[in-house]
Image (tube, rainbow, N blue to C red):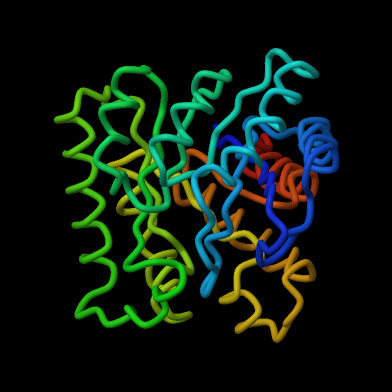
Length: 264
């Protein structure tokens, strides 16, 4: 069964729901759990196109109080930290996080050994360049083959570092150094790659949905995000990272009801 990962952005500038800091972020996370999130993904650095990096110290100062508070409020919560810095990941792991969601695919040389020692799960995402420059790196000969070849290389690096295969999830990086057409190609071919790997997909409210629907405000892209969610579950995605947990959970319940309905 596909799991839902609720997004908790502890940043002032995330593309869709920035500005939730401190207690506001904690309360948002608790609401997502009530709506049915299986995981909460806590991030302290925006990686939207054009976003400027923050220091590791600032990133840790944003996420650690939220992680601690969520753990106190809900000791059973499954937490992921959205970071590309091993130092931030180490602090979050010490606070009880069970997954590292790394948009850089483990580029920090300390990240994969850290995860291996900790025995937690990791998401390796595909991205070219940095958030500030990634949209200038959309030149591919074959976006689908090239993205998955890179992800396979990162997966092999994770295994070589000692991370158990069952704890590695791959993310094609929708919206990260990809055009709308390239995002759609990656989504269209998901079934082939979900049959081979554990895939996490993060496409919620992203710009390619607005390019199709004409919705310029990210928070208004719920219906398009639900369409992606239904395609994802049909394709075999293991974890779906979303803003709108309740709406996604209800859409999936109807999909599952149709699929499992008895007939004669």
